[in-house]
Every structure is written in structure tokens, then in C-alpha cells.
Image (cartoon, rainbow, N blue to C red; front, side, top):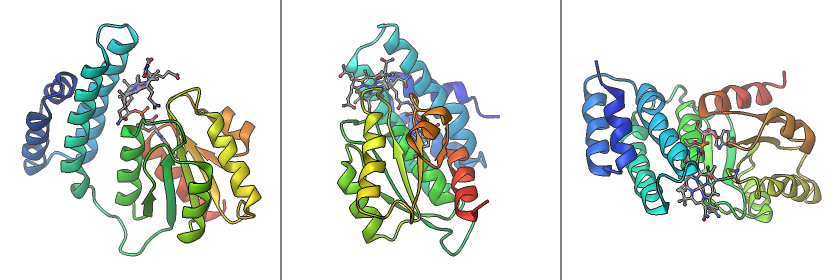
Length: 212
Ligand code: B1M
């Protein structure tokens, strides 16, 4: 039985090589990628968040933990099962303008790809016009926006405005997520869906595209 706390601790102290090796070994032993993410990686990053909030650590510690998180994701990502041979739909996703947080968004990307969606990952600091362009160029079914800062949440509304201005709002569904975001906010700004995590994001998009 893997001790997921070991992985959480490696993330916390930023041992990116050891963390990636731990994930690799446990995957070989049959542990599921979802368990590695949910029971080892995310709790590690949550603890980093708590320590930063309490001012027990500073930016360099956060950055090395983020690097360990990304190193693990690189190992886990190819092992997430793809549940479908054909694409279930096209999703243009990014973290909104002014916001550099991309760990959570990257996890959502992994879950969506694993579930069989074609994902166009626009990265972080994505301007409203860039979401519009990506949605048009890729004929996206969904525009998915992440924000981690309360100050960048208004960019979600601006992006929805840009989709309306480009006259493609009726062609795409809009989903939002990220720590300062909620279902109430989604309703308020006219987004079609909200997901608190990657697994729910898959379910929400599935419902949005089924037209239920
Ligand atoms: Co920043 N940061 N940060 N940071 N950082 C937070 C978010 C903060 C809460 C810390 C705190 O003060 N307690 C705070 C925001 C406060 C607020 O506005 N409410 C904060 C701040 C203030 C800042 C800076 C302003 C600090 C400064 O410079 N003074 C600065 C801003 C830079 C910028 O963006 N312009 C900054 C910088 C950074 C780093 C660069 C050092 C680094 C980011 C590295 C990176 O992402 N590559 C960083 C980090 C790592 C954090 C914390 C510690 C961890 C975030 C994280 O990765 N969590 C964070 C504290 C915290 O969250 N407790 C903090 C793990 C991740 C798996 O969870 O991202 O929530 P999360 O994603 C979840 C869900 O939210 C959801 O699914 C994911 C998986 O379950 N989800 C979606 C996310 N996106 C989704 C989209 C969806 C659906 C679900 O659909 C589209």
C-alpha cells in the first residue's frame, strides 16, 4: 500500500526528481494515476497553500513545490486512461489574463484529455481576444477559463463579453473554475457551468455538450 503522505512531503519540500520517481514506481506497481493526483499531489500543494497563507514559507518554496508538482504531472499524464477513441468534443482552455497560476488548470487539462476531449491548452495569462481566436480557429465546443486570483476573476466576464462581441457566444459553452470561483459567480456572469475540480470538469462538460 503506497504511503501517499511520502509523495505529499516530497512536493512540499520540492524534491522534484524524487517525487517523479515515486510516482513512476507506484504507477508500475499498479497504483492509479487518479489516486496519485488526489491522495498525494493535491494534498501536498494544499499544505503549501496553507503554509504560504500563514506566512510560514516564501515565494521560492512555493516555486520549488510547483516544480515538483509539474514533474509528477509529466509522469502521470501519459498514464491517464483515454476512455474514447474518437474525440468527445473540443475544448479551448486557459488561465485568464493577468493570472500565472496554471497547476490546477493543467490538472483539468489532463482529466479532460483522459476523458477523450480534444484540448487546446492556451496556457496562462490568456487575453479575452486569444480565447476568442482559439475558439474560432479550433471550432471549440467549450471555452474553459481558470482563475486563482480574486483580481483576475473579472477577466472571465470580459472574456464572455469578447465571445459575445465576436458573435460566437451562442456556439460555445463556457465553463469556469479555480479557487475564488463558484457556481454563484458562474450564474452571475452568464457562464454555462462551474467545476470545483478536474473530475467534475469532465462531468460538467459532458452534461453541457449533451444539451441536457
Ligand atoms: Co499564488 N496565490 N500568487 N502563486 N498561489 C494563491 C492562489 C493564493 C490563494 C495564496 C494566498 O495568499 N493564500 C493568493 C491569491 C489570493 C486571492 O487573490 N484570493 C496568491 C497570490 C496573492 C499570488 C501572487 C499575487 C503573490 C505575489 O506575487 N505577491 C502571485 C500572482 C502572480 C500572478 O498570477 N500574476 C502569485 C504567484 C504564485 C506562484 C507563481 C509562485 C505559484 C504559481 C505557480 C504555477 O501555477 N505555475 C503560486 C502558487 C503555487 C499558489 C498556491 C500556493 C497554490 C496554487 C495551486 O497550484 N494549488 C495558492 C494557495 C492555495 O491555493 N491555497 C496561491 C494546487 C492546485 C491543484 O489547485 O489551482 O485550486 P487549484 O486548482 C484546482 C481547482 O481550483 C480546480 O481544479 C484544480 C484541481 O483540483 N480548477 C478548475 C482550477 N482551475 C480550474 C478550471 C476549471 C475547473 C476547475 O474549468 C475551466
